[in-house]
Image 1 (cartoon, rainbow, N blue to C red):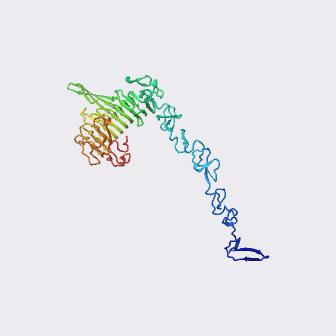
Image 2: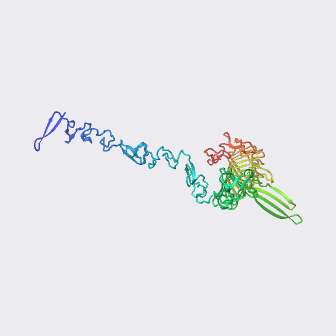
Image 3: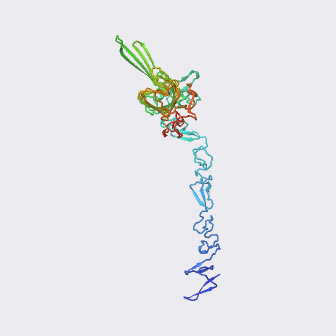
Amino acid sequence: MTRTSLLLAGAGSLLLVVAGCTKDDDVTGDSVIGDSGGIVTDEDTDGDGVNDDEDCAPEDATIYPGAEEICDGVDNDCDDEIDEDVMETYYRDADADGFGDPGDSAEACERPDGYVPSDAGEDCDDTDASIYPDAPELCDGIDNDCNGVVDDDLDTQTYYADTDGDGFGDPNAPETLCEEASGYVENDLDCDDADYGEPVIVAAGASPGDTGWDSGDSGWWDSGDSGWIDTGIDGSGTAADPFTSIQDGIDLAEVCVHVYEGSYYEDIDFTGKDIEVVGIGGSSETTIWGSGNDPVVSFSSGEPSTALLQGFTITGGGGLLDTDTATSDCGSGGETCTTTTLTYRGGGVYVNGADPTLDDLVLTGILLPPFSYTELSATETVYVYSFGGGYYVADGNVAATNITAVGNFADAGGGGYVDGGGIVTTQWATFDSNSASAGGGVGSVGDFNATNAVFINNASADNSGVFGGAALDVAAGTTYITNATLAGNDGLASSYLSGSSSTNVINSIAVVNDEGPLWDYDGSASVSVMYGDTFGGTGNDWGSLSDPTGTDGNIAANPLFVSWTNDGDSSDDDLHLDAGSPAIDAGSPAGAFNDADGSTNDQGAYGGPDGSW
């Protein structure tokens, strides 16, 4: 050990006494003169292994550079930071439910009063003690258990705001609730929730206990074998006092008429109104029985496309009768001959000069007069024609979805007829067991566009000297048929195309005509059939047309339906394609025609982007 002492020997003199050996700057004593002449202290007062001049607490052996930082409010490692990286995070628990607000935290060594540890800092509402993670979910419109879902795992349903208090909810204002709350109702039937008088209500035919309207003493009752009985009170159109006549509802309404389940015996006319008339139980529950003297429903006063008829079965129509009488000189004695022509149009729905929208309609059992020619005398003759048993459209543009025409008859267009100036665009349509001289399913001299349609068991018969198609008879205008299935339509042709018509068929299946070809034309019409399956006609499947099989994607193969009996009864038929059908993925490969799953179009009524119906 080397010791160094400093002695003063008088003013201006310095005496250096050295005992033992010395080595520059390498000593363990109290101090040393360094190379530069300064004095360096190497004393470690607290014995913590760090010299006092480098120790921030030279008298405390637990504090020195490199010491372990502990949570004690002291800078243990001499880095000028206190308790860094060792304090705990705590969250304020204002509502004392044991869970803290993740947005209100504090760093501390010990949990402060009113705070909870970090693993409990998940309260989504720290102002309400009933709301915290895994709390019991209550039916209160609040996320009680903080899982991000309101009233989950409870018995909830959707209710709708009833602002005008008429008992009908706004479909645009739904709320998921556990029970009906004030200002809300279960239905979404209000077409104007700011007007107590809309919808106008019509109710007839429901029995007490039925799911439909129960009108008590002010409506119609089911009287069993006695038929339907009107109690004689027509009502005022409110839910408490409904009309019993649809026409009364139309006459009053400005926005919509809601018709409850039951049967209604009347013909109705929209009279130019831009309103919705809706059978709220759907076509299977609500029937309009026509008088047999006129169309059951008429649109002939410029109704726009927003005028809607929806949710009815329509039957018993007689069509609009037009009588034309012409005279001429005849015979050598200057006699006058009279020719009277009676024409019936539109048994179920009559459209002329209007653009209504039709949805969810069943047109059935409507039988217009067949063609006839009667000589009443040598100078008097009567002709009878009829057009459009199910529907008739002239000078109008009709959008029709979910339409079923079954068991109807007219001389032309048993299921429906599109006259000059008429446009019909239909999707998800079924024409079943209709008959006519021409166009058992549909006859057209206008424009007819059908997508995802079924024509089954329709028939054409020679009642007027006209040889028309059983499913389709197109004599003028433009027709587009996309993803249709035509099966078991028996006549001189399943589809007959003539005159100036242009018909374009794609992705469609035509099978089985027990009386003739599946396609035929008169040599003048324009016909295009692409990506179709034509199979099972009698004789030549294509009549006078050139057979396109093998070109433009056309095939000739049994399409293999799930079920097909060809017995004239469609109730036991299923025209979806069996898994082994050659028509699967055989439609147009163009992406616009792809099935809903993105695969190539399946031919027939259930293929294409909207084939799931």
